[in-house]
Length: 287
Image (cartoon, rainbow, N blue to C red; front, side, top):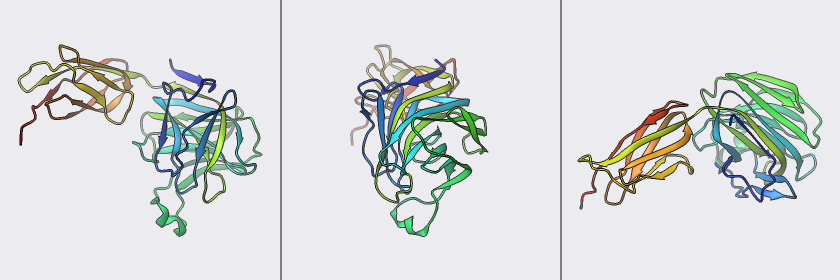
């Protein structure tokens, strides 16, 4: 599967396709179904962004993210964003196509410090790489395509903006979020009718064995990839484990078992092949 198309027709968010992240937003409204087949996403103001959906899988250097926006909470306020995210849990390292009530912009983080203490200093949280005016309408389809360092934005299938940035190097996850609009404070919601992602990167398989310091197999050890909630398994009676469809590139593998200390190891996983990482656990010492 090199792409997905989600019409949000289920009873809730399809968590096999998407992960919900609240990176630093004070808005804790999780995504919810709205009507028969729409998803309601909420975001806070421009100083506290980070309420978003991220694709479970990573996209490669040639990929696109699209969303059909069905409406906003308040006419003339708010909008939507689609794009790519390569951060590690913080609202950084993204390239977004943002649509508010008046303009379309390709944005990246400015590097300004976040938090209420910096609000009145006027530090912009984002830098605008390209911008054009437009007339907001619903439904509207927003698409951001990535080709290496080049990004092209489309509105309803027509090219409208281009920009280049080296901010993201390597694979990235698709991001979809509501846009706060012109409100300085307060949460606003956006309704999404569907979303699509094309150009997923090849995934990896990781196999190995968990042993003790003397080389004996440890059964029932937990093994997971740090930073994810969906890559987890237990070792079998021979101490063997397998994790499938994990992101290619560097991953941190964490293993633990009762009576043993945690162990962490970094593994450079090659996409499309089986990678191996054996893990040794040391017995806990009684203090």
